[in-house]
Image: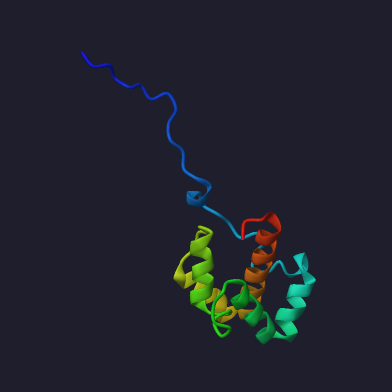
Length: 111
């Protein structure tokens, strides 16, 4: 009679599969005033910085596709509709949130 294998430790999900979250809120401008000022007074510069950080076309930094790509990469809950609304109604805030998140993940060594 063959012996049966007994599982004593259940497999766990890796960190990449667990839900992520934004490092700062959409309206948390005071958490990084430099990014906020850049987004307010030089939106195009910040757009190029974000696109460069993500190795994408410099015209894509403030797009719904870029935000959705970032959310998907870091498993941040949300939808394309939420991304679209964020970009449409709070474009500078959404771009600043994305840049702050990139900066914080880079500082943690996970970007």
